[in-house]
Structures are given as C-alpha cells and as structure tokens.
Image 1 (spheres, helix red, strand yellow):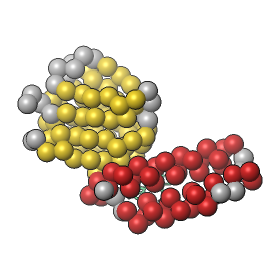
Image 2 (image 1 turned 90 degrees about the vertical axis):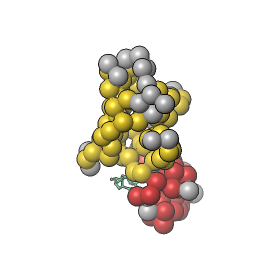
Image 3 (image 1 turned 180 degrees about the horizontal axis):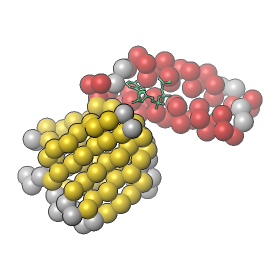
Length: 133
Ligand code: ATP
C-alpha cells in the first residue's frame, strides 16, 4: 500500500515521525481517513480513538483535540493529548471515569464550566479505556 510521511506531535513531544499507510481520526465533524495522495486539507480534531496503519499493522491511540493538516503529501497531527494504546494506564482512566461520574451525579450543584469539565473528563476517560482494549 502507498505510504506518506506522518508526524504526530503534542505539547509533550513527538509521538510518531515516519511513514504510514492510513490514519483514521475523529474530527469535530466526524471520522476522517487519510490515505496517500490526499488533497491538501485542514480540520480541527475532536476526541476519539485514532487508528494508524504502519507496515500493514494497525496501532490504536487515544487522541484528544488539536488539528490535522495535509500539505503536499505531508500529514501532521497536532493533538492536545495523544497516547498509544500500550502507553495508556487503564486503571488511571478507570479512576478518572469514576471521579467524573461522581461529579456528574451532582450535576445540579455544578456551574456550566465545572459541568463541561466533568463531561470532557468522562469522555477522555472512556476514550482511553476504549483505545487501550
Ligand atoms: P487524569 O484525571 O487521570 O489526569 P485527565 O483526562 O484530566 O485524566 P489530561 O489532562 O487529559 O488527563 O492529560 C494530562 C496528561 O496525562 C497528558 O499528558 C495525557 O497524555 C496523560 N494521561 C492522562 N490520562 C492518562 C492515562 N490513563 N494513561 C496515560 N496517560 C494519561
């Protein structure tokens, strides 16, 4: 399968810099799939499980926020947080899920910002668990 150069970066550093065959990632408007020879493109990222195909093997990751760009065949995923499935601490994500659910159980007492934060934390925790499995 044809490949392209993919870079995955977050504020924590470089997570991938090499050839890839396929990238599937959640944008703010739905899943997008990038194959070789994709047209120039930019989109904002949502929160979801990303799938990257490298040397015929699929790798999964939790990918939260940021942006994706394709320019002249170079693909850059700049994400707020990105964790390969094998690097995800499942127990930490389960604890984060419990904490967020405890907060959301008292949603009437939360302000708009606190509510949005708890909902986002719950979503991140669930995505991490899904990516890790
Ligand atoms: P927590 O409450 O467990 O910190 P969180 O959703 O608030 O979860 P983030 O603010 O999204 O965490 O991430 C902070 C940093 O910790 C990022 O570098 C992220 O990649 C990392 N991280 C968060 N949760 C996990 C996890 N379960 N496994 C591995 N790395 C994680």
